[in-house]
Image (spheres, rainbow, N blue to C red):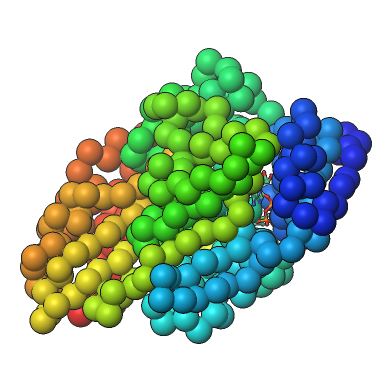
Length: 322
Ligand SMILES: Cc1cc2nc3c(=O)[nH]c(=O)nc-3n(C[C@H](O)[C@H](O)[C@H](O)COP(=O)(O)OP(=O)(O)OC[C@H]3O[C@@H](n4cnc5c(N)ncnc54)[C@H](O)[C@@H]3O)c2cc1C
């Protein structure tokens, strides 16, 4: 049963920040993750602050400076937006494979990147590392869905599809708090468990994501996202890849490769990027990039399959560019 809480709907950013400053206050965007967390006792709230009536936090604005997406923009709107679909395809594809149509029309981009981990131990009330405990139960337990990279202290995988795409597209998160606004490069937004296993983002209590900014897309840039899960719908990534490539004359001038479903944060593979950069996408080059991508993987007892799966996902992605 959900412990009772106050529910408030501020009508300005200033009011929202005032309300979020209170102890036990939580942001409510679409509520598709938040309400499950409250119902299952993952955490409690004294006050739930809905952002629904705060003006200016929803919608996509495109200009010569790039694209700005309000944190409250529903994923379905992002998935079907023409500029995002053409110039930032990875994000449109990632938004279009989140959960189900209902989740995509209710769930927002801000909520997607701030959602809490799906690790069954974390969700089921174990006093795990992420809850401040001393044990990651995945190490000795069922770890088929867990990390093969970056699993230091906590082995959860980051659940967001769009986080990988936004990282490949070099987005900036604009956060706002009572101390003002700050622009956080997406690569600095997520917190690895080696730094602090009890938090997923650098947001401080009382801060919220206001918008996400994508830099102007180069004329020769293309991008993509693909994930594999247990099912084709209503499922999180077991392994996914967001890629952004600049191609000149058949050669890869610049590459970004970021994985979902395999690490506690969106996992950028510099090794795969290096294997691609300056080369034509021949089967040999793609094969070398796939091998490089899994260098350093540290699978556990039940998730070694993710090594091969990830290579397959990246190969499939690369073939889209050929
Ligand atoms: C059955 C099911 C399947 C799912 N499948 C997927 C999937 O395949 N891929 C995937 O990526 N996700 C999936 N999700 C997770 C989630 O529902 C979506 O990611 C959704 O986008 C979350 O957005 P929301 O607006 O509903 O967030 P909320 O539930 O409102 O919020 C989520 C969390 O983020 C915080 N938050 C929300 N907005 C902000 C903000 N602007 N600033 C600061 N903090 C904020 C909230 O306090 C809360 O802790 C699934 C969820 C369910 C229940």
